[in-house]
Structures are given as structure tokens and as C-alpha cells.
Image 1: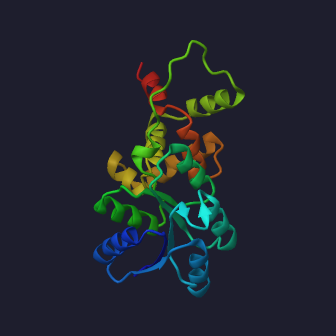
Image 2 (image 1 turned 60 degrees about the vertical axis):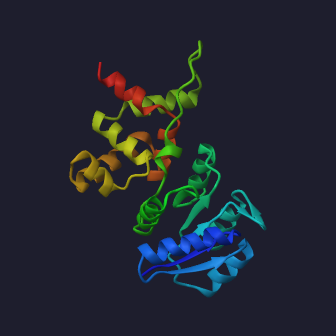
Length: 226
């Protein structure tokens, strides 16, 4: 059904991924590469790949170097990160550079399959635990930078429902998932998403998620309740 490639130098993880895909994505093919160079060779030979799963600790590409190189060389190929590293800023940086998802290696089997399915269906996958904003620090002096004020003003333009939808987007939920969660039509979700992008001056869904990640959405929702 799908053709995937995993670039990871750990045989045990590749074997585990093979098991998940063979059991949950019947008929799909998973190719394996131990390095970025091997992955590039396989990509050049396979013109119908649906997804590349990229580790961030390859022998010949550390961190986001591999993602940057692959996006430049094969812009048509969706790339999702699979990594043991779960720093929130790293996730945001990967998405900003064009990754279509970020899957921690600690993800349980069923959740991993759900993440792969979501990505293969064309939706962005962001783990809720990674994207959840940490508790705000209490300071005596409120932030006063232009960027903060601008973001705050843009978020204040959103309606209550749009704030809720944006929160769902920040958790990596697809439009279909949001519709089920909020008990509304998927077309209504799409309308909300379009309005959110316009009000935030966001160029894409990912851009809106990054903006949301810089603020505590619950703060705005709580203020609306009073």
C-alpha cells in the first residue's frame, strides 16, 4: 500500500519498525538505510517513496543536518523525524525546516502506528507531550518585547472556538480528529483553521502551530471565561 524508507543506524529499531508496519500497514514496503548516504542512494533509485523516517543521530549526519540536506535534494519526499531526542525546541526547528512529523522512539507500538497513518494521510504529527507548553515562569517584570506583544495581540483576535481549535492543532491533531473531539463538522474545522491563519498572519498550519507554541493558550482561554 505504501512505500517507506527508514534511515537509522540501530538494527533493533529498524526491526521493530518493520514489525509495526508489517502488522499494521498491510502490503506496505519498508526499505532500510544505515546512513544518510545510503538513504540518498535508495531515494534516487526509488521514485515512488511515500515517506522517509529519519533518525537525527546518523553516523554521517548529526542533528538536523540530514533533514536540511534531504529537503534540499528531494523536496518532493515527505520526511518525518524519529528520534530519542525530545526537546521541544528541536521539534519546532524540525517542523520549521519542513519535517511532516516528529515521532519519539519511546512511542508505544499502537501510537506509533497511529502517527504513521496520520502522516501518510497527509496530516502533520506532533506528539502532545512534546508540544505541551511548560508551566509559565513567574517573573516580576512582564515581557515587553515587540515580538511578544505582536503575538499576544494576534492571539487576542481569535474567538473562543478558534482558540480551542488552535490548541488542538498544537497537539498535532488532524482536522478530522478535531471535528470528532469537538463534535463539529470537518468543514467547520477547516473554516476555523482558515480564520486562525488569517488572524495570526500565519503562512501555513505549521506556522500557526509554532506561534501557538510560543504562548500559553490556556491563559487566553481562562481570561475569556471571566
